[in-house]
Image (cartoon, rainbow, N blue to C red):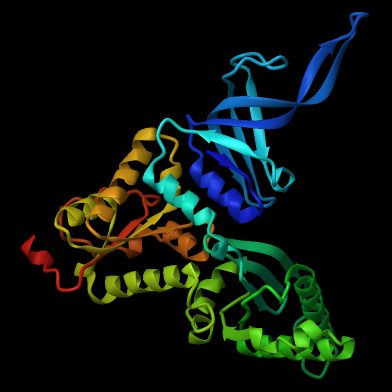
Length: 383
């Protein structure tokens, strides 16, 4: 199957499609040793087309980029059979076609392809999460929370009856955040811009933004004020976005995005875990048994399980998803690059100690993030 990437969201989809053992065909730069007529050996960078069998796949979220290392499987004029080569997929390779060969295309990979070609999945929501001295400017897509800029500033503490420079430092900080917003956010294509943080901070920030918009006649800001939604969040750290997205003011604007749907599903799971623990379970063994009893309403699983280096592990979880879908279960695959997926991935097992139903001995590792909500009315005591 041949792909053509256009943005970081596509990169993340490709990262979740490629597995060790797949073959990749694409053009790439490689240093090639050539011998001249005089016997001199020179190293020249050349563009070559290679097919490698994948051994390792690494994600670099700072760029973002994917490094794919493997051995050459087809004889080439410049690269011998069995030699190692590394492909790098990044913004430099957007619009460069490449082909992924698999012995078998699993259902989760085909679902991922269908999602990737859906134009509605592009980023339509931006967020600025801030407190005094720290701000993160993010794009929220269907499967990723992308930090486009982080602004940090040293804000002196307020001193009663003594000049501290606090107010001036705060104003400079707000100006820096607004500069980043003007650079990265195109209001014409955004559905909304979430401003999240302590209430006083968000109010002061919006007051500063409105004043600058009037002063500099920023028509995009002045004409689209309704796109800015101020909500409470505990801090300016990225994880506070999850708290902001639960706010009804945000929910009403982004009601049709999968980000909100995942957040609501995860909140429902933890609510059930606290109030009706016999209807919320996690761990492969529990999920497997619950599915055999046709008791699952919603399955939540992190995409990291489909990237496991061991083929048997990947196939185990793919089979679980297929079996659940066959029973009519609503399957939600959480991205570990999304704030909701990060929460499932990091949830400590010590807080989930109420599981007592199917087996007496619980054998679950932290990174095996498989959660279920049982169907309402299902009597766990009889199974």
